[in-house]
Image 1 (cartoon, rainbow, N blue to C red):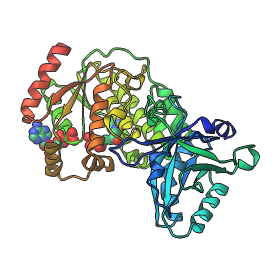
Image 2: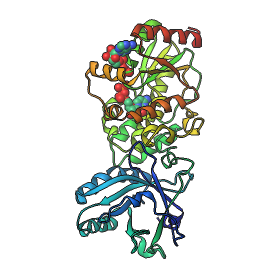
Image 3: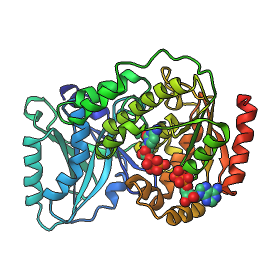
Image 4: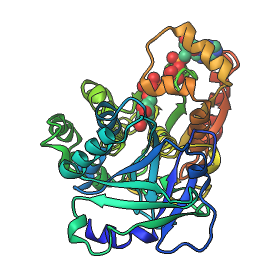
Length: 418
Ligand SMILES: Nc1ncnc2c1ncn2[C@@H]1O[C@H](COP(=O)(O)OP(=O)(O)O)[C@@H](O)[C@H]1O
Ligand SMILES: Nc1ccn([C@H]2C[C@H](O)[C@@H](COP(=O)(O)OP(=O)(O)O)O2)c(=O)n1
């Protein structure tokens, strides 16, 4: 926390207004050089007060857990007139420098209850709280940092001016992706679940199924074909037909043996949830290695799904916020079995919705969000297509099931000499 406070004034702050617009960026500095007030603050009404709350200490599991619960905690404790916007603090373009929090706009008539709640948070929780204060002339804004450690930190109780800042080259939410949202080795994912043992007892059972480390990666004897795509694009239909047409073995990721724990890990923050899915791929890889000694193997979802959903969830806003094409974020893990072919089924949103309705099944929360949030769906699809080593081959899934099957069989025969 001390080193964090030392570099506080080099940090940039961003506040997300909604999924479609660019965030507001601002910085803080000791003296004012006549800069304009950032737009975020120009919109603040006279009677509103603003704060930000960041999670600042604990190990990374504790920080992830605390941030995951923070909005609910704040919402329960603060007056109902408070609005919350997702906020970040980061060192521009410096990996792993992202801290997450919330920007709170308080429109209640009296500030005392909000102040009391925030003081309690500062005393009892691993948070840093900033208050934003409007200067006498109504134009300048200052940020005052308050934390449990403040009394011990010289200089941090002083106020800093809030000034506009340019958008960084990399969207802040891309800074912490590696080994927090997407895992590039068995070891990194394993470590996360190992550290969760005391707070999530189910982790131990999962680690028991995973084994110690993946077998040395060797090229399977028979072709391994992965089918990817959003929910209801026709993966189940196609993978079952491929199994029958090729006399293949059908596997899926996460594997069947993890299904008792999937719902449990779906409730956890991304760090833990994504580590669970990453380990699922290594279990499936083990099964693929076994089966592909005898028959071709068809796999329903694999690493493309794990990485694409993780990246698209971690990065907010329009597709241009994603890490650019060619970024290391899209590279296949060095220790994970590589399929011979990955097919991505795509479908226009209207037809996908029709198939979802026709199936009439319950959807995962994330899939419901896909329905509501067109931009999220676009991010997932774009991330799918940026992953390399192996890259996916896109197939339009709107023709009849048999036509899609024939098209994919052609691809397989071309690529895998079956
Ligand atoms: N090519 C297709 N044309 C029309 N309907 C399809 C096609 N493929 C699948 N379906 C139907 O769409 C729904 C979703 O397909 P499914 O294979 O379960 O998708 P997923 O496994 O990707 O979620 C099912 O009701 C299925 O019968
Ligand atoms: N190999 C996999 C498979 C799924 N996931 C994650 C990605 C999404 O959060 C969900 C999507 O799973 P969902 O159950 O909706 O998909 P299906 O209905 O099985 O097609 O699972 C993953 O991370 N890695």
